[in-house]
Length: 454
Image (cartoon, rainbow, N blue to C red; front, top):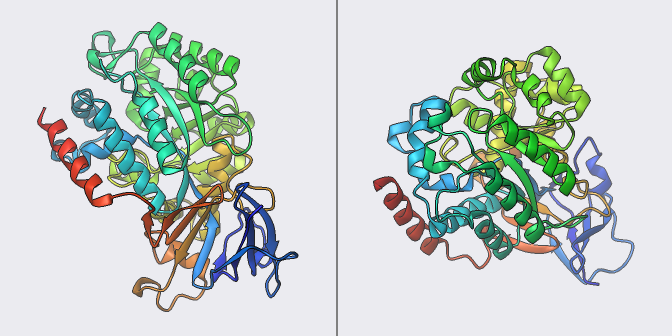
């Protein structure tokens, strides 16, 4: 066993209302097992000698941030002028043909950029919703697994799907859709090849038909049954826009939550991306079912989709996590920045007193962990995984700040100084350890130019 004392932090957020004084003196990590083994109270010392110490007196420590919704491949189409001012459906129609030209190398570069940016923002666990499998890109999820493992992150990678193309009344072009048999077979293959179970899992697979307007009712139902038989989680976009609500009424004769229940998805196995346009009764139903929502504030503002009723969902019993969404509707993969956006967007709906800095930090940590079905992540406590983000608050933007944890949110932290995952340092001095960022950017930019040029 090798132990490390993160000593006397400037501030610490343990999560879920736990008094930070319980760890005012820091925490001890068993780096060989990747676990938190002790919380040191203010003014105290570890109960046993440690092998090493890190002076954290210039750092604010939080649980590693957890991203519950992303599309890694979209880092290749950030700030693309033809869709810079488009709403969701028009945005998708213009981008689907571009994305359909991706190959495995473009996917590898896009994934690496997304994960590196997340890491440097303090994110230790991420999900990804990948649903585009044009001819020749059947290995997209396998590529993601390789990159996740190479960077030492945790991820829930979802085998997305689209089965209803333009010819059948859907939005995607025909070259971007697959038949149900292919989708289900590959879903089962990926779970068998990559899904890890239990505490400490690094890579997990979930099943994620894209949305009601790109997937058949039959595939939604079959996917729910397969997820139950394989004991994996379910993910999809739902209630992101009024256009989607109208689509469900027109094609299924149901509102979105009625549709969700009709295909066997209204369960605690499911987490939904966006979840903006729910009415009062639907919020209660989602809460009773324990169905989680990934709140994506920047994307919702970027596409003018609306404001999710995050506080009401959480208070009804629906876990709420945060997501950066794709880098073509957010144009960034920065999760600590997303925390601040969540605070301000939700305050517009609920006011300042109900939406505190601590609450939105919990959405990005313990709430996100619950959305992904991870009881071992999201808080700083004995026995939890040693996934930690350490932020400095000594720049101009923080000068004059009084409470260091609140300052992360209100003063606008942008980058973590250090990030630990499973007891190992993955970010130091604000940069991913061992990654040639300049070379990555050059290759990624060239791939982006090639992709949009056709």
